[in-house]
Length: 275
Image (cartoon, rainbow, N blue to C red):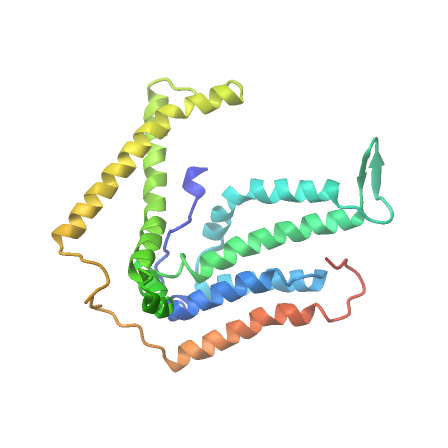
C-alpha cells in the first residue's frame, strides 16, 4: 500500500502538460478544484470522467500509474459513499429492511461522491505534482504570491516549505517501507490482534521514522547553509519562467473545458438525479 502512494512524485516527460507554464498550471488546478463541485447532474459527471481521460492522454502518463495512485483513497471514497448511501433520504425507498432504507437518491449521491473524489485526486495530481518539477513548483508559487511581499509575508520561505514537504513524501514512504521490512525480519507482527494491539505495534515504526526525519531535516539545513543559501533575497534563477503564446492557448482551452462543467448542468437530460 505504501508503494502505491504517488503524492509528490514527478513523472518526467515532454507532453503539453509538462511544457505548460507552472504558474498557469497552478491557476488551472485551483479553478478545477472549484469547478468540480459545480457538477450536479449525471451528464456533468459523465463529462467529468471524459475530461479526466483527456487530461491523462494529454499528460502522456500511463493509466496504470494513475490508477496505482488512486488506491490509497479508495477506502476514503467508499466509506464516504456508504455513509451517504444510508443517510440520504428520498420519496420512495428502493430497498427497505429493519430501520434501514436505501433510496435511489442515495445511490446517485454515493456514485457522484466516488467520481468527485477520484476526479479531484487525479486532476490535481496531473496538473501539479505529476507534471511539474519541485523547482518549477517553488518558482510558480513564489511568483503567484509575490504581491503578498508588500505586506511582509515570507512568500519565498512558504513556497520552499511547501515544495520540500511534497518532495520528501516519497522519501519518507520509502524509509517507512524499509523500517517495516526490518521490523518484520526481527519478528514484529503488524497484522494480527485487535485495533489497540496493532496501534501499539506501530511504535517501533514511528520512533525510528521520526528520528530519521529529523536527521534528514538537519542534514538538509546544513547542506543549504554550506551552499550559502539565504532565502529569497537576491536569489537568481538559472531557468526564468516565461509565458508563450502556446501556454496561453493551452491554458484558455483547458479553462474553457473546465468551465463547461457549469454549463452542462443546464442541459436537459431525461434521466439522472440532480444534487
